Length: 298
Image 1: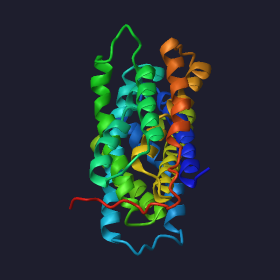
Image 2: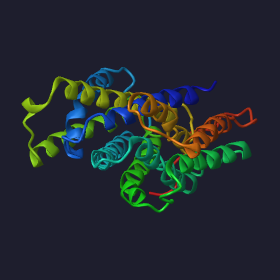
Image 3: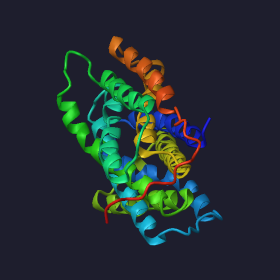
Image 4: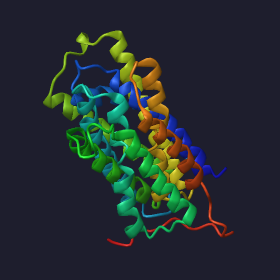
């Protein structure tokens, strides 16, 4: 099993758990507060990365750092929109897979700008992953162009852009430095959000603190893993849709622990997702390992 696939699966599991924890924050916290406070959970990961011995890089260090920071900013803004959507009362089993459509955005950017090429099995895998996300999201009676989809477009686009920036950042710097920049960008955002919308932290219950800290921790670990996948010569057009299949993890959890129900469409989505994972992980038969793609525009 290639290293990039192992790291992608780690990210998929972490994000699946993160998606469920997002719903467990409850309606008492706004998306702004959820993002700001959950950032505390990423601090142990940030500190660990800061002491890493692999922060140096022979590439264009400044560009990689800036792209990593921009990716973190886009990710933070996407998280705020996502938390706000969940806090509005939307079902986790529907909203979580809906926002997972973000790989479409990353693929649309990465293929032309990075010049990434897929073999025919991987093309089938990308198609199946998008179909899986579709079946996860469209509960028949609402149709594809529902109001939930329109709201979910915001985190979808922002996460898609963040995924692209993460990949390009790892072309210039190590995965550790890129991850440090990505996560560190969320810290000043958290302070800024609390300044704009103050919150009396004493009003939070012990359960809320635990959920929020775990929320930030699993999100951070997932992002470190996905950046490690990118740095392991993984293609953004493959890794991103694989990571977007985290509903395979979150939907069963929502069924068991949150008491939510899914129908035939969601079951079909899970089956398609499993097949797409196998197809997307199919390596080219060429014995030569491709070099990391470079951004073709300035």
